[in-house]
Image (cartoon, rainbow, N blue to C red; front, side, top):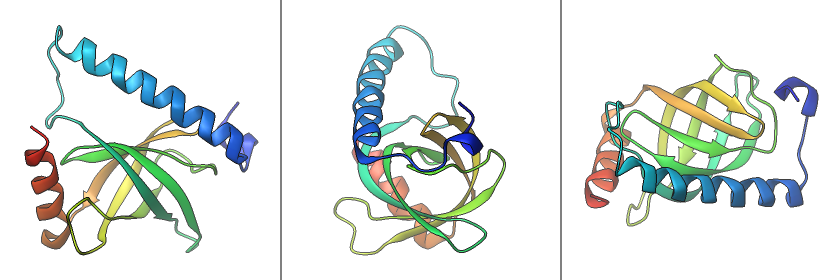
Length: 136
């Protein structure tokens, strides 16, 4: 089903998708040991509440599964088209402020999304770097 066809997702489906994604990430982490990662920055498990604001100023609550210095993967209960620029807001553990970053939707698979940061001010970049370095 395409994102534009599915509209909103109920809490049971969202919870089920989060569990499937967590299992896939655990499996991916095991596979990463045996194959080289071609990404610019390594991914780190996050498990954070995420708020997305689209171009129509609509706020959507979601969940950040993994984060890197170049983007994040999240789960959203509503459809967002690939290629759209959005504003992401989240709080990293141990950080006192909300991280605000602009990102482009690069991947959409059902309710799983991949975002690439396109505008990351210093106030957002530093906490993300600190979180990712701490996780090494």
